[in-house]
Image (tube, rainbow, N blue to C red):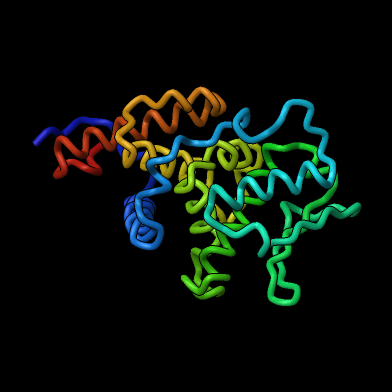
Amino acid sequence: MRWFGPRCPVSPEEDAWVASSLTWLMGEFGRGPLELPPVRPADLVPAGYAGGVQEARTLLDAICLRMGVDPVRVELELHSREVPDGHLRLRAGHPVIGVAFGHAADPVPLVATIAHELGHVLLVGDGRIKPDRPDAERLADLVTVYFGLGVFGSRVAVRCPRRAPGLTLPLYAYALANYAWQRGEHAPDWLGELRFGSRVRVRRGLRHLAYRAADPASAHSL
């Protein structure tokens, strides 16, 4: 047994949660989302984006299509008052995502918020999990990673490192590392879209996953 190697960057409990949750997502959604190229900001956000209602709605429609949600199901509301990180509610059976105009003006956190709320639509709205499940927020974040939108959520995690009960920054980076590993990417070029700290964490996670694949008995050694 090798005693020294890349240490798992999260706790054994978090490591097990990511592995089991990704396996469950594969069972629910298939491997199709993993086979699509990860979404980068330039792929989704048009030049000159200013945060208008129609622009935000166009983003919502694009994210819905990426995540397999019928855009007709989902409404978007922009509010003049601040709505912390957005919110999701039902109106006549339709999910309504509400965000503040100021939040909508910045497309990266807007995409992260919409994707997260659509994660709840897929999980809770479609009856895959119960709304009171303790890890529902973390799982909604992981759904965004699974559907290739993790670059956006990772940037929000950098800005809001304590945005519990969702994924913490270290856990988000480790989820991205597992996402890349499942795609067969050992040095993904999309890491350049992440902030420096997140890139370092994802690479650390990938080194650990490669080491564990070569020597499973030493998964949590040093």
